[in-house]
Image 1 (cartoon, rainbow, N blue to C red):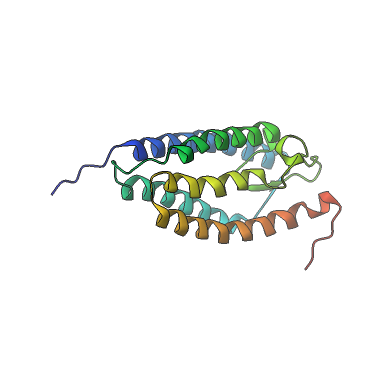
Image 2 (cartoon, one colour; image 1 turned 30 degrees about the vertical axis):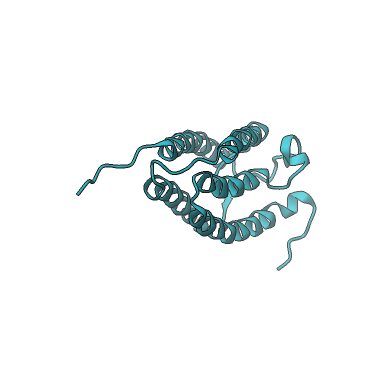
Length: 176
């Protein structure tokens, strides 16, 4: 029985995404600590671990379940480049306010520049596209479907929590 891990283009893409995520988490954690030290409040803490599980499971499933010799759909692989550029545009636009958690700092202005001029939640759009595109790039439509549905359920909840937390800063009274 061969217990070696498969290594091919799918696993290479996943490895790069995992390294990227770890680097982003370092930045996010640093920003989170600083925002909390400035009086920021975290909301939605209970659902945050579910995102860690979802994204970790997604990466693990991609790495372990997609054959190393899976056919490559190059346009979908190429789509990852503008998606990553969009992600970094979001991170750069939010600057010290970018985290992977929902931290609200009441005195901080709402960021309305960069991609936020066009979309209310641009990073979530990137993640939605990425969760579908990566497995589809290697013919794993079932993984794309399962993780896209799970992500949609979590994001629907998270967006409600985030919108409620930001409502007073937008001049909107949250509905109860």
